[in-house]
Length: 332
Ligand code: KPL
Image (tube, rainbow, N blue to C red; front, side, top):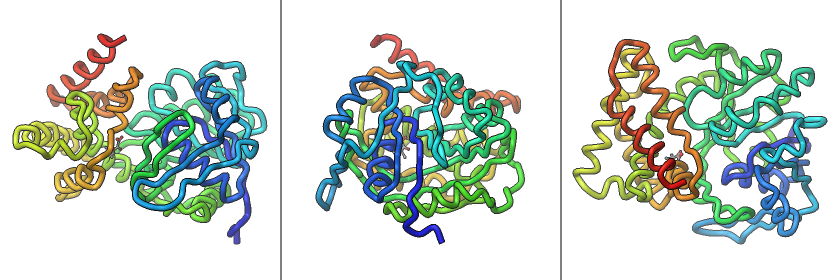
């Protein structure tokens, strides 16, 4: 019934995923307000619009810049989101969400918007559930491949899926499945994403998706960041594969200690992600190369915390955190 109906959406974060979502949603006729972290990006977007190109095929899409209004996030010249759209989609990294957004989001307390969060790792949903207990908070997991080339250009590097659904309050790994939701805004968002060309689905078991992705990110991201290699090169030598295996085995021990379900072929899935995203710069490597803080605390750090809460030492993931954080600190 929503087919073709346009929607007002706020997207907070204009990194690779934010630009891809905004660009496609705008070209499908939706009203998108894109919140950027810096003034320079706002200026450039207003001047040249969003440019999406495809790694293997197709003509680049160029959005007309007057189709969207850009706001600022980290410069805080606007400290609140006025008249939020039907859905607020948050695509910033965990560190920005935890450090820069709480004030802005708290100003939404009375608006009770539906919020959809696309972060890697864990910890973001709990934060939002605390900040906005009356709002509908949704987790989203995507396997879309997107690489930002410049402040306004993004390369769609591989078609994937988008899964959106509720996570039980105070999400704990073994928590029960959520009943199918009837939040009209999020159903509308899923329809709108489909019309814009995404394969988007509702899930009643987001915890499984979140922890499946956590396992992939906890093995691939820190190693690509430390060795500064694209995902596919992780499989280039036996030595590298062995280090991945060691990280994987330690993560699985944490999952078992915490009763987090995982699939028997999880190792194969990780190797397959390396192959299918072989040319990709992982999001953590991209952060390191740009001198930005990474999400390691919410990926490998969360495994360390979960393990230690269950009385398990998690030394390899702890070392990953120290090395990646140390590398960023040294380069600053
Ligand atoms: O999610 C990713 C990331 O880079 O954060 C993977 C799946 C590793 C793809 O690069």
